[in-house]
Image (tube, rainbow, N blue to C red; front, side, top):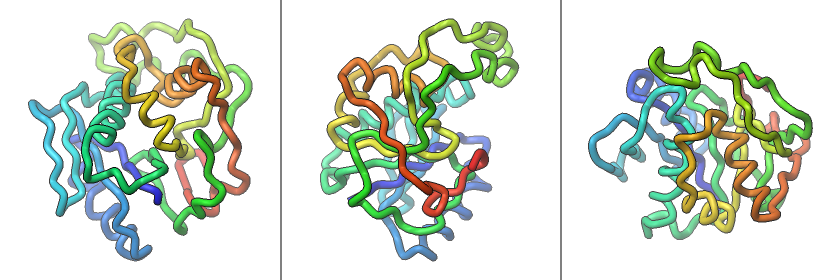
Length: 201
């Protein structure tokens, strides 16, 4: 069973929440949660499917937010029934429910070449070092976050234990690097856009 995880933030939740819940209702799918950061404590409102995470809620906080979300899911029995997890941005459109039989430990839209080291410049908080500093770390094959990606519970557990998120700026690449170090490589899902439409699709 697949859990859809929509990553949002407090400044956008009022506009995103009704759109996401309405979309998932039309798909007759209640296997999803919506996540925001910038909170003083962890709260999961089961009826609303809303998860509040203690983390930086700005652009540079995305690696922290995603890993802490995975950790919360790992440690909460409410999510034990799920075998796979689809990470999504809050503006993505789910066109149809994903066929779980096509899923692997790590899959999505794979990029095998180096990415743009300046993508994040001027997207972060003004006092954040990343805001003016290019990414200098390595690139490995990874699933691009702007298209949505899916991980298994095996991968989720690996990711949930990592704590290097303050030193990373690209959440999707960060996920790829952690899994790469555990010999889990990304698989490309052909025609992923028939299931998920993202702003880069």
